[in-house]
Image (cartoon, rainbow, N blue to C red; front, side):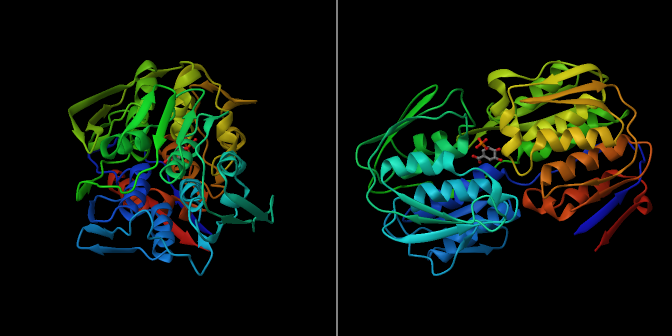
Length: 440
Ligand code: S3P
């Protein structure tokens, strides 16, 4: 396990930083390119471990995916060209890889096996297996409830269903829409509230997809045709760590160019603005069907605001770092309607509650969220990341304003979504000698 100790410098963050490509779109760029019949060039693909797992799984199914210079090239095999993998498809820490692949594997005329790391193997997959079984796929699971779970998917002929999902989940919705590419008849998914909508945007650009806010429907197609160059905007979820850092460290002012500002992804900026943060979106444009722009942030005193309701799926990945913002805001922040946090890479409600208490924050765990009292003076502490990249990065930002050294265990998890994170932390820290890393 790798450990990093950060000594508080309280140095303002000033300057420009680039965040890597959007994780959700990177997975989808690999998937849709692999299913096309073309050679697709992809720019600014996130080279985080989650996306590398998706690449590896498609390579195991016979898809040629290579990096040439700064670009990735995928030679699509078409909707009927995937080959049976001879090995287990290892999805690492990536729920997106597993659930999206399940939708595809459900429709293939072969059997395949999926597994992942100890965190992923405990995450709920029935939410995808149940509707895909209703469509005609067969699943069997070995080692359920253990760190060694292996899921076998026996795919075949699928029939479309009209499915009402109990959860607002882009992964569930996408798995079913992907299966619908091969299914007989129409496949529809209705969500309780809208989850991130990258998949519908991509599908709408390449075929006829009907969407009335909460219901999306798709018919099978013979072929997927894509533009030959796919440019991916920066990941708002990665930017969020530095948006919060600049908002809570006095004297900060940063610019983060070319970030995905799709409203189903960037809602945390709206919440922070309600808390008093000084954030503006500049040079807004469209890139491959997604809103993109620069984000300017400068320090401002924050105050509590409720974080709840239908907006939660639009900022679900940002809640750990919003908890750090809440600890630095005057008043009590109540986060609710966020029970999904319990089934992310870690139980993010329990973990954030324990970690914030370790830092000296008055915090209460509730069934579907947290109550956090600010503004707190954070203590330095030795904390774990629980194999969860977003927990490790949130603790690193907390360290910026803590009054003692913070040691974070399990920092290798950051590679899941944000290679380069520590270089940016180092860049903004004016006292590099105060920054030390140690591997165990
Ligand atoms: C993702 C969807 C979200 C998010 C995850 C990526 C996606 O999960 O938490 O990091 O790319 O579809 P759910 O929408 O399933 O909660």
